[in-house]
Length: 298
Image 1 (spheres, rainbow, N blue to C red):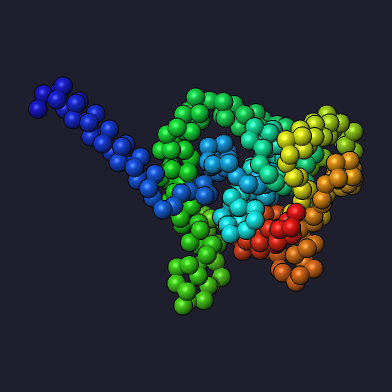
Image 2 (image 1 turned 30 degrees about the vertical axis):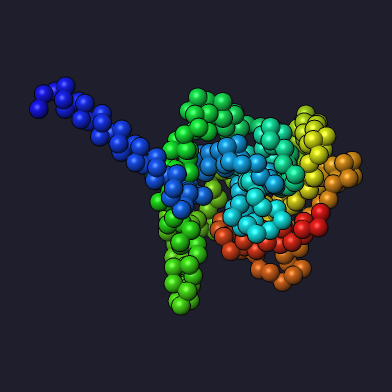
């Protein structure tokens, strides 16, 4: 076979493989909901919000709220739900995106509300405006949820987190330590931080920007709810400045506030964490169900 013919065969075979995978990615009954890196996990959430049909509600915040997967809200009045709980970010960045596609309900995680923009937010903003990201809105095969490695990771992770789905007759065993879990003493590098009381005065610009975002969303008819999510030791380290600011926001804009950790505890529902901060899948499901119940009549 001549070199030119070999080249043509390789090109044709590659095109067939790409086309075949594109069809598979479109018709496959599953998509990656989780990813092996924080960045890819953020891409899945960003692309779902920007490219999927308009959601009824969006949850905006950090990796703390990122554990409440949209599927957990299926068959509730909040569905379809989008999640902009971005690893290493905060509601400040997510609210800017929400303004581009305002839903009926905006749920704002207040745990890291005063976290200032940083390099992670700059990277996400640059990625959203990149040609490859925009192209993925037209070609689903390019979306993060269609990456083979993420699809495999998500499948393995979800099976591990939900052993009952594998064999209903076998009681779930205690999960072993693996690459998919963190020891309670080990914090993920994406763990969000909040300002300390001593530096609170430097956050005036952040507070003003949040007020402007909320006002803009209200002008567009959005129903906004402030929610404090259970976050283990991070909840214990919340400073008074964050509490006071949330109280002021609620009073200024007549917003409802919810403490989901307190609501779960008052109902006797146990709360568990993977690393001392982020909810385990079972607790995240419980938190999602309760949040939907509490907002059902709003």
